Structures are given as structure tokens and as C-alpha cells.
Image (cartoon, rainbow, N blue to C red; front, side, top):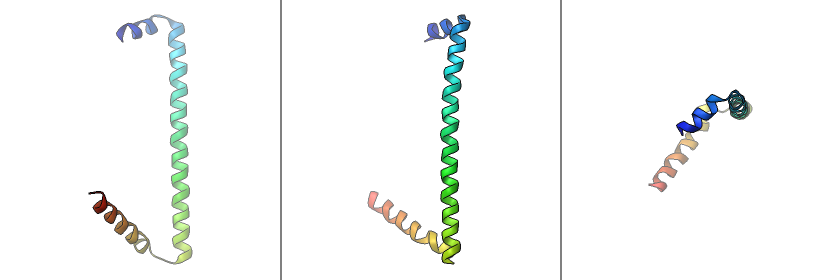
Amino acid sequence: MSDFIDIILSNKFYIIIAACILSVIVFFVIKKAIKLFIYAFIILIAFLAYIYYTDRSVTSNIAPIQKAVKKAERVIK
């Protein structure tokens, strides 16, 4: 492994190629993270709109979900 690193670091052309590959990987990871945040934001807005239009409190919406999670935990164990 150290030989591989030495070969890459000894040649400028290999360094440029490695930097390009690394920048592409970082770009796609950041792009995926941004998509994830956008989806989470859309889901949050939809949830808040649901609560607003149904005139229910957040705790009354979350309580059934908590019960279902506890039931699922008991079933799994």
C-alpha cells in the first residue's frame, strides 16, 4: 500500500489524476447530502402543513407513532 502511495506522490501527473478523482467523489457526496436535506425539508413542510390544516397538535400526531414504535420493539425482541 505504501508503494502505491509513493508511486502516486512521485509523479505530478498521477497527483493531478488523484485530485480529479477525489474532487469528483467529494462533489457527488455533497450533491447526495444536499438532496437528502431537501427531501427532509419537503417532508417537514408537508408535516407542518398537515398539522396546520387538520388543527391537531403535534403531540396528538406523534403519540400513535410512538406507540407503534414501542409495539414494533416488543415484536422484534
